[in-house]
Amino acid sequence: MNLLIFSAIGGTGRELLEQALAKGHQFIAFARNPAKIDDVHHGNLQVVWGDVLDSATVEHVVAGKEVVVSAIGAGAKPSTLREDGTRNIVRAMEKTGVRRLICQSSLGVGDNRANLPFFTRYIIISVFLRHAFADHERQEAIIKQSMLDWIIVRPPHLK
Image (cartoon, helix red, strand yellow):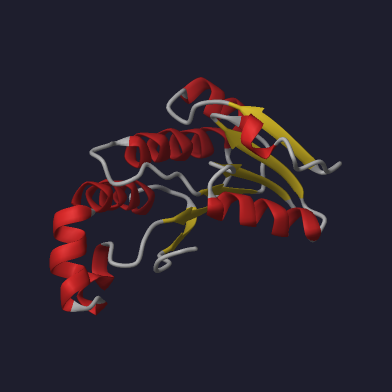
């Protein structure tokens, strides 16, 4: 497959990159700081420097891909990076005819928040992660309103 991943330098992105290359997929890693994956050398890997907030660059790199994966992370501080970056990705995909999107969100976002333990739901998320979860909620809304074939993955704590 011809894959593109946004944020290939984080833990999840890096793991996806390594698994895809091990299976022989063509892989484009889109990253703000490609130096963080300089240690990965593979004939099927192309590293593209860019900012997910730059819509022209996003559109250029999305064109012709079979699957786009978003593992955009922004930490716990107030941010709209996930929302704004996802908006650019979705628009680029719709414009260029790329249909398949896989997006990493988080356990506890959306309709599964009620499944979390009391302490996590009302203390951890409400106090410490409220900004990140609000950004994830907006990110997911953009995806759900799109015309794409999408999957949202909501993993628990990743290590």
